[in-house]
Length: 354
Image (cartoon, rainbow, N blue to C red):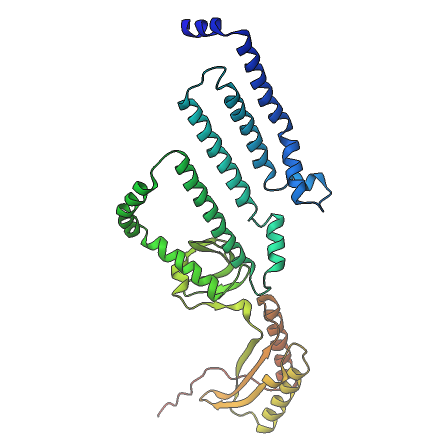
C-alpha cells in the first residue's frame, strides 16, 4: 500500500497527461473497432450493399478483437518511455498481442470454412457436382484442423518454447501415443477410404450385417446412423470399411416375387388362362417394367402346381414398394377367385391298412 502511495506521489504532471493519452488511445480503438472492421471487410466485399451481411462475416468479430488489443498494445508502447516500463513487461505485452491476434484470426479463418459461410457456398458452386456434400464437409473439417494446428505452432513460438525440443519429445512419446491410438488412427484412415470410395452419403438408407438405417453424419472417426427404431448409432469407420454394405438408396428398381402353389387337380387350361391374365395385369401397371415380367409354371410338388410370378417395379422407397406389392397381391387374389382356382395347402394323405 505504501509502495502504491509512493508511486502515485512520484507521478509527474507530464506522466499523468501521458497516461490520459494512453487511455484515449485505448478508448479510440475500442470505440472505432467496429467501424475499422466494417471498412476493411467492405473493401473485400465491394458488391455487398447490406450492412447486416457485412457484419455477419466470419472476420468481423476477429477484426474487432484485433483492433481492441492493438489499442492496448499501442498504449503500452506509448507509455514505455514516460513510465520507464521494463523490457520484460514490454515482451509480455508483445507476446499477449501476438497470441490473442493469432487466436482471433485463426477462429475467423476457420469460421470461413463452415457450411454457413459465404465462402463455403462459392467453393461449392465452383467444385464438381460429383463431389457430395458429406465429402466436401469432411475436407473443410480437415482444413479447419490444419488452421488450428498452424495457429497452435505460432502461439507456441510466441511463448518462446523451443520447437526442436518439443519435436524431439514428441518423437519419444509418439511411439506411446501411436500404440494407444491405433484404433483412432484406423478409424481416421477408414473415414478417408469411405469418402474416396463413396459407398454412401448423408441421407442414404444403408444396411450392414448387424444394423440398418439412415446416415445422418460422417465424421473423422465414425459414421452416425439413425436406425428404424429411431436410435442413434455411432459406427466406427474401421468397421464400415471392412464390411459389406447394402445401399438401398441406390436402387434403380425393386423386385416383386411370389410363388403360388395351386391345387394338383386344377385343369391346365385354367392354369394357362390364369397365367395370361396375371401377365396382362402386370403389363398394364405403369410402375412395372414390362421386360422384367415372369409368370411361369415353375414346379410340380407333392402339394400342388407351383407358379412363379416375378417382376421389377420402379417403386424404390419402402413405403411405395409395399403399396405396389399390396395392389399386385390383391389383383392376383381377385383373378384366382374369378377363375375359381384354389390354392393348395400343405397336406398329407394317410392310408390305413386293414
